Length: 321
Picture 1 (cartoon, one colour):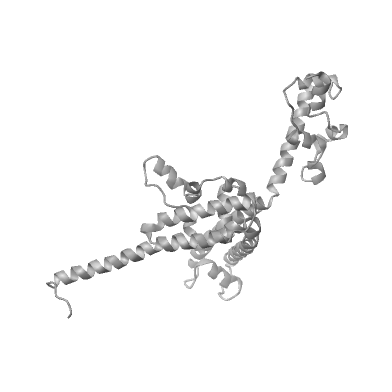
Picture 2: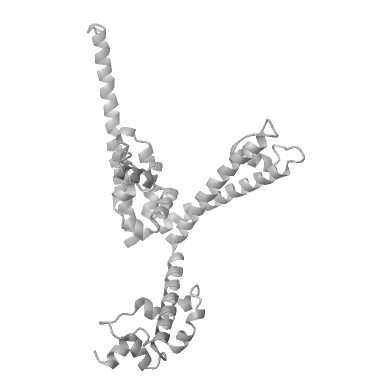
């Protein structure tokens, strides 16, 4: 490659001089800044072969020496990285991940503080209740506290605020999940679908996971205990919350979890790569779960027959005419 051709393929060749000067102060939250020639060159630029880029930069007057070139390269790559992270975090699936994590945090904290509230209130009021409902009664004035117990009432307000925030976030998650991942939301439900995205990190990561991994998402501790030889293999992780898994007899729950995970894996891939709605996935899963659950029904029927036979034997084999 000639020097002129190499210079033209260098990442800094097409960068505006003003963009190079403004790299340190680049606001990567701003869309125009993310599209600056310097950021674009680092993110999308390619060269057919490697070359002595520091020497070329000095030769064409971009920098005065190699040390200055490496300082410039560091600044440019940091700006490009910030732009990429900002862009990725602003994506709908990442915003959904943050929302469902915040929802779970609010619910967990509200319940923990509600327990603390009940314990505290119980020390001064024999009629104190429990749970978030008790906190709501205090804030609504339905359960009066004696004078001097304002801190307990204040804590009840915080519990109610957190519970209300969790409810608001749940509504947002239920609205947003079908937009981000329509097939996943239809199969798993909006909240469970969002939690699967949260455990995977993003829709793309979930779409690339095999069904076996999706089956045990959320059961990592049990899985690692199994790998160390301290426990049996987990049948399911968070997908236990799916009605098809939870509503199946324990003996067949592993089969149900595998069936659900398989369809969820397909749904995530369709959502990520095409976004096309596939209602047939729901029908196929329902048919498969019906077959699995029928096994236990048949087993129960056979068990009843065997029990009847055993009873007849105990009665000397006599039957009604």
